Image (cartoon, rainbow, N blue to C red; front, side):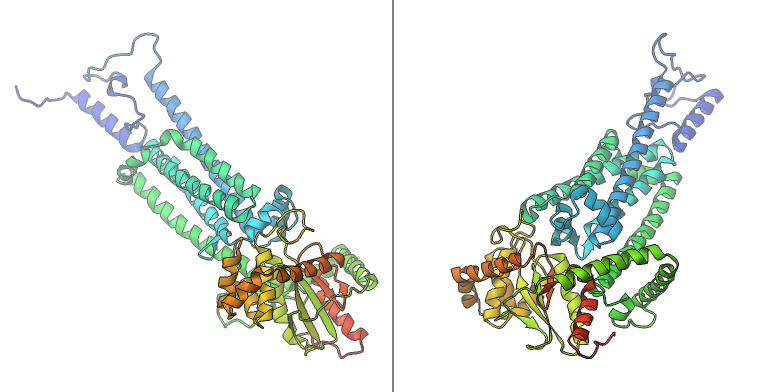
Length: 512
């Protein structure tokens, strides 16, 4: 008698059936599979029937499979939900109106809301890519993996769920770090961002029973079904990455186009420099031109929206015409344009205000077209309770230090290099040392600057600017005054300046 054993024909048939079932995923002999004793009787295998009255092992295993499938479907739905919320945050990050309205309903629609503050901080991006775009890619990719694996059998699905547990666990660690930044560095919380954190936690709980199953991923990939899932997921994820990158590029272009048309100068194609033939920028400009033409045709067909816009424009015009002229002190105030222009614009701004940054870009496009008839003066109105008692809460922590630095940079005739450097790379919650570092990079003498920054007289000068602004009706940034009158709507700026030019009997400004 040897150590081996010969099997009868019936025994070999049963073993082939079992092996085939395991290979196709119908029978999963992984961690959650029943033992060999629970397999129903097959001729010659010597297995025993379960005791009378005990639950049928096949049914128990089927119940386990239904529960696992339900948890996986729930995980897919939650990942898709987070894809949607992340997409909403991405649109909000780029200032899309519908997304800002939707997010505003959750966070508040003012510039002081936590969502606006977080979106405007440097922590909302990594290497120039918005974190919301990373969230869209991550959750959509994970949902694709789970969906493809769910169609390939229980063994592959279990391994994919295990991988999902690891990925979601890592995402929660990242979220914990981001929550710390919101609490410590930004001093504001984005409620919609917190929703993604909660949904990620629920997704992890849904897939948690599959923890440890990721170890079977290598074995699953060796199967034909596993290889198909991996190949399909890789191709779809690559396409997803291209789609997210293209969407980010288009949204960034739209945001830039809105910035250069912020002052009511017309379509983006007239404000942007010509793009290189055949480039991506040229294609986007062409799309914008066609969209502007379609919008113009719709405006001719749909009368009500046109009348509504005319109503608000005429209302703002009446408010401007009837507004009192404010005596705003511009002695020693930094300005761009000729010293004695007929149109004198005073801008009250906050160095950490994202809309002020867009307005600065818009002025850069606008002023060269005015033929030296417009001057813009820059004055400080930091939305920071440390120096501004008029704000109900601190919107931009550290903006008082930046405003003090602007005054000191002005004394050394380095205001505009300082201004441009701060707006190009706005710091988060800066302190005195950060401002000294920025000003030194802008070319000031650091020892003189530091002494000025700490001097009580500098704080008194800033307090005088803030008091003057509040007395003139400034409540937010940016706020513009044209020849002493407060402008109700920033996007009426260009038309209002043109009317002022005509009123003073000057030649009309160029339209291009």
